[in-house]
Amino acid sequence: MRAHHPTLDQMRLENVLAALSNPMRLTVVRRLAEGGQHPCGSVLSGVSKSTLTHHWRVLRDAGVIWQQPSGRENLLSLRREDLDARFPGLLDAVLANLTAEEAEPGAAPGGRD
Image (cartoon, rainbow, N blue to C red):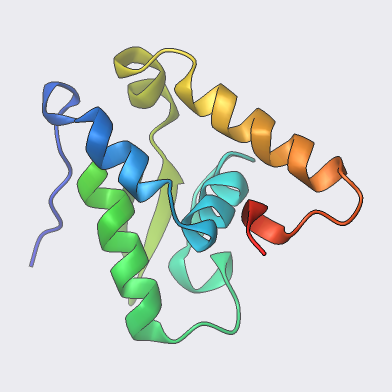
């Protein structure tokens, strides 16, 4: 089965914001923002395969990530250029906020208690 990746004009702000509203998915986005492709099993640890599959689908269907088959697993990468073209400044603002939250003493991961 081939994964659905929305085209640039199919990407909707409400879907991207919903995908970014989960702390676990924000962790994925921050990791993928470092660049390159990452095997799907290496991005988050200690999470069940079914939970990972759900998060990958939400991010992929919103247009936040690319998911490409490679052998027995999938490689994930951030759709940085597409997100910047469709929603200028959004990804930078999200990533800057994550960095600022991490710098605050006592901040909870993902900004939630």
